[in-house]
Image (tube, rainbow, N blue to C red; front, side, top):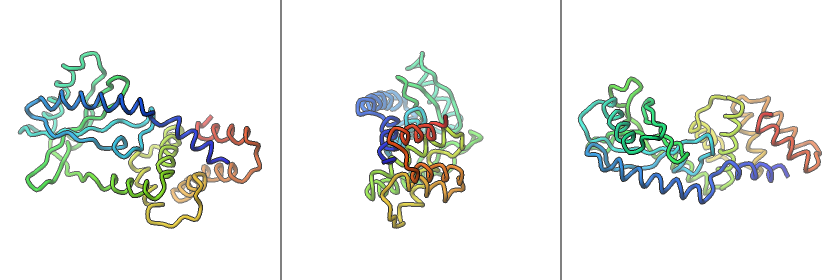
Length: 239
């Protein structure tokens, strides 16, 4: 029965179809604006938006623009920020490392320039904003696609774990949660089809025994439906 309430919570923190449509419209406009700049082209989407694991209030929309100029990574970021600030003068836009963080139409967007050499190797700004660090895209996307094909509910598991991570200030990066879930469940055989069991497995295998014990109690105690829902929400919301 607890899985019912876990799925309800996962649905609450997921973007609706209308919200996803608004994000797509904003991204389309953003791509047109930046692609008109002579030093930027060939944008693509990445991160949790592309993988379908976004969570409201936690995840950003990641957009990458190819930088074809000759400047260093700081120059690329400065040009990108200037372009966006001119188009969106009233929006919150700030430079981070290695990206531009912006809030358009209440949509948090993470915009990163990248370079690509003649061999297809890609790189993004390094943490000193002087050079470029090699980066490999696609591996996590492929793993999440395979995980979804195995069982769609693993995506809901990821969303719930991201919420737990935020509410309990665990400090795990969102993409690391996705990697850990893939490592645990993608290539292993699981007897249980219960998300609650999967949450317990994740906690137990990553050193969060206190949280594992709390989930175990929720699964095994003979609570009424109303009390079970209340206790689950109290746990996941850390209240």
